[in-house]
Image (cartoon, rainbow over the protein chains, first blue to last red):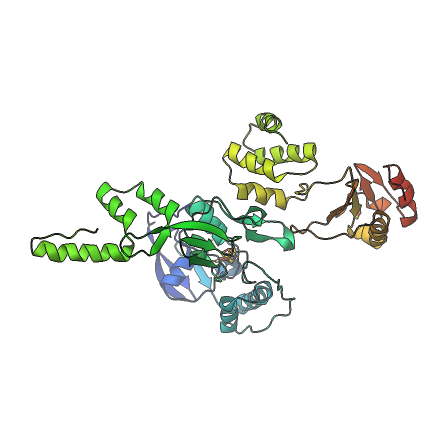
Length: 275
Length: 161
Ligand code: SF4
Ligand code: FES
Ligand code: FES
């Protein structure tokens, strides 16, 4: 579920020998991101519970002179917490992971660039390339899309299917989904840009999800198709009436124009309406 | 599977823990596989997303999504059986039944003869390694199997050359 927003008491954590302020219980990776300390990561998404799937965000925790590895996306800030992000141990672990990811998602530019940034340009593992893979051989099975779809959107259109080396993410039976809203949350959270979505005429097509088609609403003013119909209907159900009517008819751009026009006319004592 | 049967199964599983697997297990046992229509109906009745049910049904090798034959032959491909000649057993079976084993979408090896009499599947270790190589037909175990034994064994299940 959504991470709690109540900040804990202020604490000091040490990263690579430097002290930083954080809130108790805050995720260490978030602290690092805020302080611009580089830690590679694929499966972290602030709006979802930490999951620790990709293992890339490993750091070493120093405790009583001993060191142990931990994923920084599941590590919580506490007073006196001390971590190191680039020890030889971590670097070795990371390189092997990057090699594995290069084999798992050989067509992903994101993975390729990320790995190259850490000096890994080749993999000793067998590259998994499948013809016609709906995710373009870019998926690393991090699970973010599955979780965004069910935990944030409540749609549950996609899931992990099959097992072991055959595990993939897709819709049941590789059939167009009836549960998909076409919201595109999966596309936004995917760290490797694996998911393909395209608006074609009056439909949004989730190409990677078995060509699931979702009808879009059309703007009454400019005629553009702008948002998945069912999704806007469910959002609208929660809004005030005047705003609701406007949003139901106009795309964001035309609504902006109308607002501006009204402002100008109001200054002159008039009012514009859309017809 | 008809709706009444499904309702009866659902009614038998009212505890939340292990409920879905329990229901899916009964469907599998009664039908020999999990039919798509049944899974869709179940999703509607329980208000559980189809993607969740499908994820479960394809995760556990216990479930089959395609109809199987009258007799299910499971060849053990575990380490011990492999070493003791399971590959030869599988090949001999393919020859006798006129099929070619093939991995399905879900990575499962399962083939059914055209007359729907036999389905051949593989498993990884029955826990009967001392009798390797082992195969199982409808719950009956056959140890120390050789390709030469197969015609006789299959004969017990109505196979004719
Ligand atoms: S499609 Fe993207 S978000 Fe979904 S599991 Fe694969 S890599 Fe993760
Ligand atoms: S970001 Fe921490 S394990 Fe993926
Ligand atoms: S390997 Fe076949 S029974 Fe154990």
